[in-house]
Length: 151
Image 1: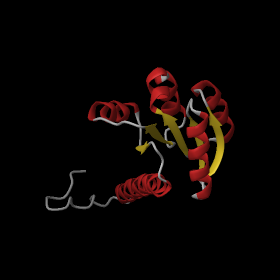
Image 2 (image 1 turned 180 degrees about the vertical axis):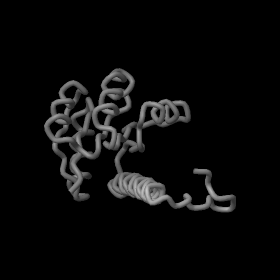
Image 3 (image 1 turned 60 degrees about the vertical axis):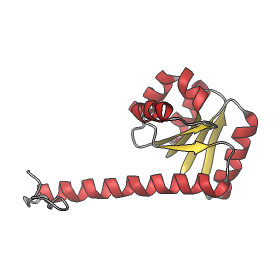
């Protein structure tokens, strides 16, 4: 079961997202209103997923960098009621893996997380296969539609 921590200053939003994640089969190990108190949960539980409100990301950028540095495999989802191109670009630059839009729709939230998890697993499997091929002394597989990759 994947573990999640929720960081949102709104108790209502935390509660709703908590319910959606629990009903979707996730283990919510922490739900808090600040990044500082979330760090305790991160240290204690090493969650796979962190859902953080946009306003927390803007005010607590150092905390996001710390999460990214200490738990590089943790998926960070930004939770916001409004997403524009600039916000999305800035969030990706900070290491955000996906976006959850308020108001929450359970199916959409769960599909978003599921799709990001699947994409991450595919990337990890591809990297592992490449590393195993290189270790075995084989040429890396050809790029689709092109020459074999240089190795």
